[in-house]
Each structure stands twice: as structure tokens, then as C-alpha cells.
Length: 210
Ligand SMILES: [Fe+2]
Ligand SMILES: [Fe+2]
Image (cartoon, helix red, strand yellow):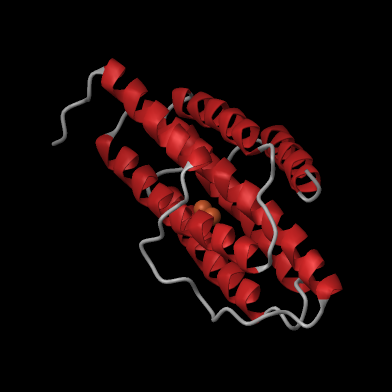
């Protein structure tokens, strides 16, 4: 069984992860889904880029949430689960970043804010205990799945690459949610779920433009 790391080490690891997530190019462990075809015209390109900027910001937030939760997770098996999911979220981040580049656009300028806010929320969920923390993962991923369904309906027909990326992300998010429930994630109360979706809405509407 893994021994608990000294807290100061954990803080340093967290700071390192935060800087990497926000400042360094993300490195994917899996190939990017789809192939890098151009979209039909500039209107579609801009529309697709706006959506992918939102998804990129969402993946920055996912890094923050998972890192915050893993920092305070009590049970080593749950911490391992959170860290494995965070690695897959890094793939998502790298794919969104790459696609934004292919669409000649940029990530949200508020990325450090999305990361920091999400890290704090993740750590709070983690401090509430592993059952709540895993319930939080389950609910987050359920909301992300619905969000991705919405984006899959909006992504321009000609942008097969972004579609392929979002479809793979959706499959992964569903798995993260299922594993969290299998590891004992609790169903969160309705008001908490509503606050979570309201918070996510602030990010998804802002990151489209800023
Ligand atoms: Fe993700
Ligand atoms: Fe996820």
C-alpha cells in the first residue's frame, strides 16, 4: 500500500501540476482522434474555434478539479482513480489545444482563473470525504456529457476533426463517471447539482469569447 506523501511534498507537486496545466503545452498519451482537415469556410472555422475554446477551458477546469481532489483524497485507491482520470483529461486538454491551433485560434485568456477556481472547488469536494468527492466526479461527468452532446449538435458539419475529438472525450467522461460510482460515489443533493451547473455555465459562456 502506498504511504501518504508528506503534505509539503504534495503542495509542491500541486504547484508543479498547476503551472504545467496552465502554462506548458499539454502532452497527450494517446493519438489525437480524427485527421486534421480544414473546415469549409471562415464562418464555420470561427464558430468551431469558439466551441473548442470552451472545451479547452473545460479541460483546464477538469485538471484543476482532479488535482484538487487528488491532493486531499484519503483512500489511496481513490487517489489512484482520480490521478488516472486526470491523465485522460490531459489527453483531452492536449487534443483541444491542438485543434484550436489547427483552427488558427487561441485558448481562453482566463485559463489561470478556471484552473484556480476549479482546484479550490475540487479540494473542497475532496475534504468532504471520498464518497462525496467521487459523487462530485460522477455528477460533473454527467453534466460534461450533456454539455458535449450540445456541442456535438452545434459543431459545423465540415469539422470532422473536432467532432472526433469531442466524441472520444464524451466516451472517456462517461467512463470516469461510471468508475466514480462503482468506487462508492454518492448521489449529490439537488441544490448542489444546481450550483455546479450554474458555475459551469459561467465558464462555458465566458470562455467562448474571453
Ligand atoms: Fe475531459
Ligand atoms: Fe472527465
